[in-house]
Length: 203
Image (cartoon, rainbow, N blue to C red; front, side, top):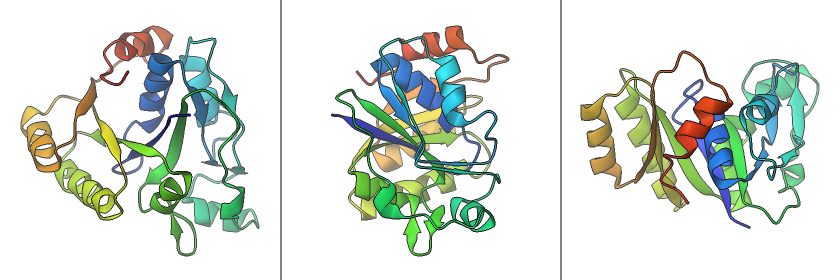
């Protein structure tokens, strides 16, 4: 079973849309280990609504918290402590796309970060970078953290208005492959996701 962990250089950089595109392109399964807040419209629900593939399965979250906060804080509000032993891969023979919460250094509990979960799950990373002032710094810091942990990286997805100078600098500095560029879209729906899935350089 091939598994990719989709993480970002921060919060709200486009991990969920990128996840839907990769799920569609690979006809893969999807799993969000920890959902914090927005329980009426979870990331799993969003991805499921954007994916056309009938082969894809959407696996239940290990933890669902009521508040849109860092997972460790959301868990505390709900009177729960995340047990990392319960963060185990769902049973599937299909390719699995795992979507993280926040960035690499987002804490799940004391002394356990998202990057630790990636290592625990032995997943290959797809890094989502959104083009904004400061994104070079955030992307290179994320890349450095992954390199220091010797975590394999399949490549990078750029999201937002094209910024060629920033993207070129990031690619040259990291040596990462650009898997996809997602532009600014007025509407994100199944048609949009299918279009980008056909462009994904990960087959």
